[in-house]
Structures are given as C-alpha cells and as structure tokens.
Length: 214
Image (cartoon, rainbow, N blue to C red):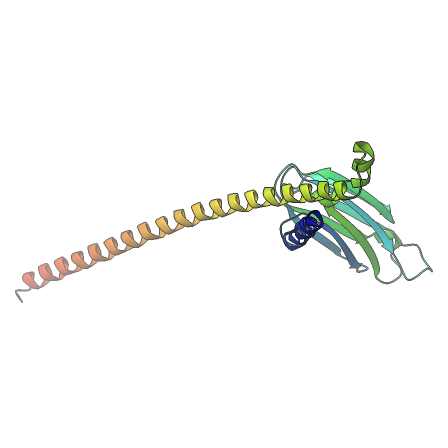
C-alpha cells in the first residue's frame, strides 16, 4: 500500500508540473487557406529531441490537393523541406535555444478546392522518446517502466528549471544595466540643465552690466 501511495503521489506531482515544465506532445489542427501560409512555433531548449508527423485531411474528394512544409531553426537553418506531399514526418535534435518554426501551405499548382486541414502531431523531449523500445531493450514493464517515465519527466523538469533560472539571471543583468544607463543619463541631463542655467545667468548678468542696468 505504501508503494502504491508513493506512486500515486509521484504521478499526481508529475501531472501538476508537466503542464508547464515538461516538454510534451502537441496535437494541432491547422486550416490552410487557398493562398498564404500557416506556421506553428515552439520555444525549445538546445539538445532536445523533436519528432513530428503531419497528414493532410481534405473534405473535398473531387481533387487531390497537396501541401508544402518547411521547418526552420531560430537561426534560419532549414531542418525539413518538402513539397507536393500529403503526409510526412521530421525529426531532429535542437542545436540552439529559441523558436523553431514549422510552416505549411497549399501547393499553387493543385489549388482548386477550398481550405484543407493538416493534423500535426508534435512531440518534444520526453514525449518523443520511444518507451516501447526502451521497455523491450531493457526488459522492463509495469511499475518499473512507469518509474522510468517519471524519472525522465523529473530530469526534464530539472533541465527546464535550470533553463528558466538562466533566463531569469540574463534578464536581471539586462535590467540592471538598463537601470544603470538610465541613472547615468538622468545625472548627465541634470548636469546639462544646471550648466545651461548657469550660463544663462552669467550671460544675463553681463548683458545688464554692459547696459549699466546693474
């Protein structure tokens, strides 16, 4: 009973933290217009595995539309590019931290119907891991397999916390530098105003002295 209670507590904790901290799987439906592009972006850390499958779903069976797909990194590197397709997949390990962009569009040569839908299954980090293969390779199942999943989730949470801590430190440094620059600018502005006022008084004093008004 104690083991079951511990597993239940770990599972509830995992569910609570995974909503915001653990890289997860996203199932997205995109409606593509006849012209134009629709994109999905996700901010991902470096050294994270990303897997995705996409498939075209069209309600109009009178023609066979196809789509184009392009996935780029934060630096603009092309990670996946495919045209004249109805389905496909891509997989990569992130090399830098930032927004990864996946864009979809209808091929111009085969436009003729209305809008089409694309189902995108986007998996990141722990969700992208093939746990069935892990279970077969290491010959684990049941509670032990669930504990391995929880262990992977905890590691992902720890990495995300470290990442957020690093981002917070960077933002704090930028904020401190900005505040210091604003303070120096204010001091310089005050000095310039005092200097200009002193020069005006000196000029007015000499002017009135020359006119023998003082």
